[in-house]
Amino acid sequence: MAAVTAAATGTTWAWQIEHNGPWRWEIGDGLRDGYVALSGPTLADHGWSTVLRPGQSVESVPATVTVAGTLEDAVARLTGFRRAARVAHPDDRAPRLVYNDYMNTLDGDPTTERLLPLVDAAARVGAEVFCIDAGWYDDSGDWWDSVGAWTPSSTRFPGGLGEVIGAIRDRGMIAGLWIEPEVVGVHSPVADELPAEAFLQLHGQRVVEHGRFHLDLRHPAARAHVDGVLDRLVDELGAGYVKMDYNIDPGVGTDRDADSAGEGLLGHCRAVQDVLDGLRARHPAFILESCSSGAMRADVAITSRTQLQSTSDQQDPLAYPPIAASAPMSILPEQAANWAYPHPDMTLEQVAFTLTTGLAGRLYLSGFLPCLGPDQLALVLEAVALYRERREDLPRCVPFWPLGLPGWDDDTVALGLRGPGSSTLLVWDRRADGRPIEVPLPAGTAPRLDQVFPRALPAWDASVGEDGIARLRNPTGEPSARIFRLLPAR
Image (cartoon, rainbow, N blue to C red; front, top):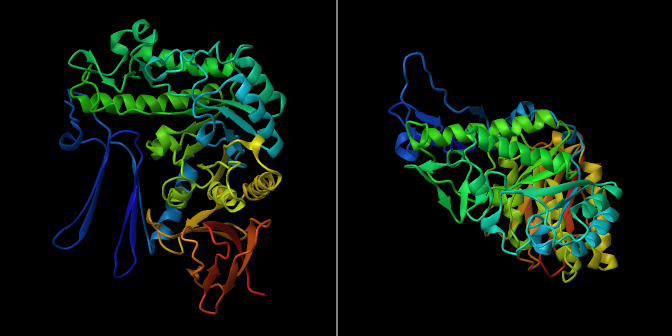
């Protein structure tokens, strides 16, 4: 998605191309006016062409356009459209709290011994989903180019993966599993079991990317394999949640049964959408997260079919705020899964900093929770309580950016979420030099600021002038973040 704003008037055109494959947008000046051109794959950019035989037609990928008086109004309209266009799901009304074992924690190396303490700790802090991330299917310790069968490891789980799944469910949580369903490693037995035509091909040879083959979901055998794997995760392994990852680039596409490689790729991308629609039809309550190597496939074709979208795989908590604050431009706040990964080596301010990032959208916990000290754990519990309090309002919030859209190196990052009853302001101070921070608040109001997180740590100096500018100061002497509720003036 993108937007263009007229400098003189503020009038903004915003658009999104609702496709999980190649796309193009173009803006330019005509003699009398400007123009916007939106499309899916093209011949010049993506090698797409097709020959129409008698009676045939071709349909472009969908796109949505809105015009508004400001950028934030345009984004609010797109936000409303995205909600209206999604297929309704029970999780939408009160997005569940997820714990995932990966980020800065097990890093794709789970075992029964490592997981069970995390399961206990996640349940104690109030997680409602526990997702076992990458590695649960691996016996060798080097699984990248051998994936594809997606059967549980016997060496990692001596008592079977069912022991861990059972522990998760016994503690009242939904069990989740990570999977990358569209790929098959070159050393996987599945690579020989499926016909060559079930994979993307160029000139009769299967496309190889980073030690993996890429399934062509136009082919019945590929579709049956993926459908069978996903159904097995639900029906046999007991998963009620899947984190669907996607970590390779398929290249220009496939020329098998297509007039061009781009046409073959377009057909495959549409088949991916059909797979997700079919999964939903067979398992209506199933919760699906799109990850894609940290949000590298975060388009509306995918997010309209999933309940969560990972915003990043950023491991540095100080680098995460610009990502979390920008995410609502293209991802619904209730979908935007921002990692919060408290660690026992963190100061209390650092713990609060990463938790604030998580609370910018859908709180998505990780980290060694069993090892946290009492004060660190208290901050996690406080963040969870705030998330539970706010989560039913999240599906009705629209974003605003009082400091403008953040730059990667900005010292101060701010995100506002305007809700039906009140608005929330999140501010991250990464410079920590004690200088005042000025944040213009929404026009037409003279609100007060109530620091709602973290209440257990020192309050920032905060006041609002008659000019509607909030003047904040971080007195902690280190990078710090705070969440404020905007209240009407007394």
